[in-house]
Image 1 (tube, rainbow, N blue to C red):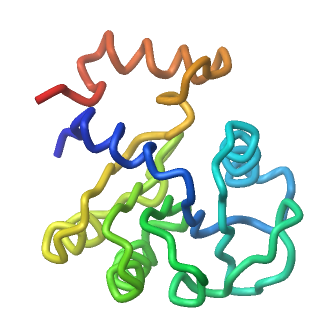
Image 2: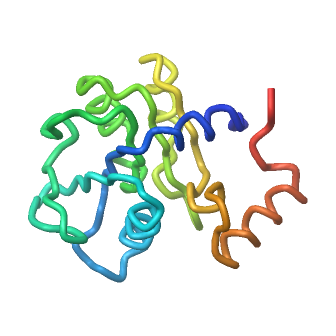
Length: 157
């Protein structure tokens, strides 16, 4: 499945998002994603089963506990639980899901993508949102350039 640029743009237009799989380890990549989004004016609600505080924000144990609800969720969990997260997002009324992938498999799994399709969820699967932001850092610009050269960058309809 090739992502569509319209889905990327539409997802990023939502300024209040959940980050499912936000780590309690401040050196984890999920925390870098969260900080970058916060620095750019997004309101990010961390979701971690252990709860607590992450980047100075109260973490919810599950997406269904977010109040008020969000319309979009970035999933940064192991792929084995991504389908379960997608279904929890649908149950919470979240209709936009980004299955993160930077290096490796990320949160992307065939069952998670299929669940999004079955549940009518707009999905961006296998991308890092940081490379789509205005003025990304060098690594993210390089990642974007490489995907364009390889023909794997999201297509415009």
